[in-house]
Length: 170
Image (tube, rainbow, N blue to C red; front, side, top):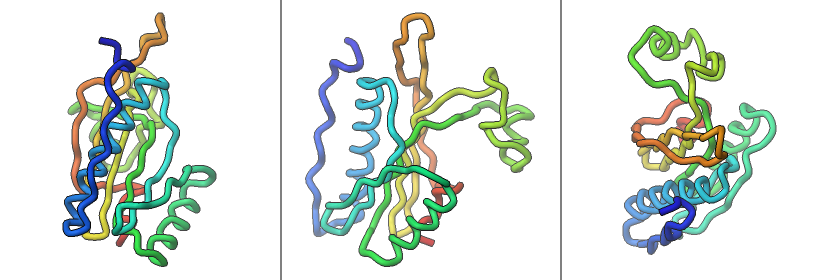
């Protein structure tokens, strides 16, 4: 079955009596929806979902200087009732247990600085809640340069999101 023929993920019901679990379910839904959209469109725009206690929220297109964007996003969070943020983007990734991985972990280099043969693309969906939970799904992007088809490799989940878009509530 072709990826774009799979059914669109169904949005979960929001439970106002259990906002934390509702946010986690909604973030997981957005991850599945992002994968579905990526396979359908072969790309994904970078955006933020800012979720309020009622389960409603805003979609914000990420653009311009990233540091200024994050500073404005943090200010918006402080001045509102937002309980969670979901960030969707395409990104570079490197995996392995080698000297390159160590240099990246030590902050000596960034993945974007690597030669093309040492990095790959990934669809990244990260979620953070006001309650302190943070996690990210990272799905490697596989592009067939001959046919133009795209697929997603076996993904992984990380906890305690760091980086520029990490710690938005802290």
